[in-house]
Length: 104
Image 1 (cartoon, rainbow, N blue to C red):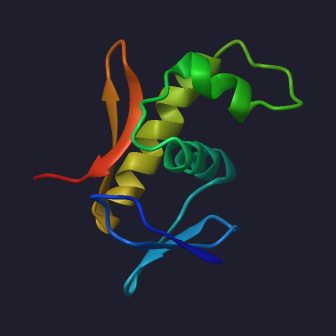
Image 2 (cartoon, rainbow, N blue to C red):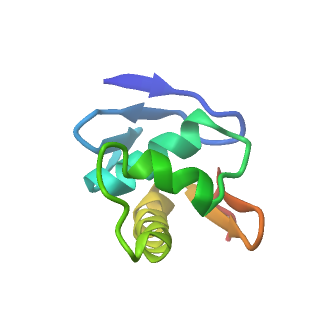
């Protein structure tokens, strides 16, 4: 367990089992959703394209034919869960994915 402070985002407590907490709120990400979230945290504030993410998401494994669609799906599912913690995964067409504060 460790705390991650990302400028402009809520302070998060990260558990390596996929649990992310902020205050008294917690969510659980799947292994793939967590890997995507962790990569976006590590590279914040730089957007990461699918081409950047795919080699990192499938280290030591064969890249599936639907890898680009998988990235979109992981981002969408993680975005739904992270919303309750005030965090968004923003997708900018042609630029990539990045974390940002959730705005209404």
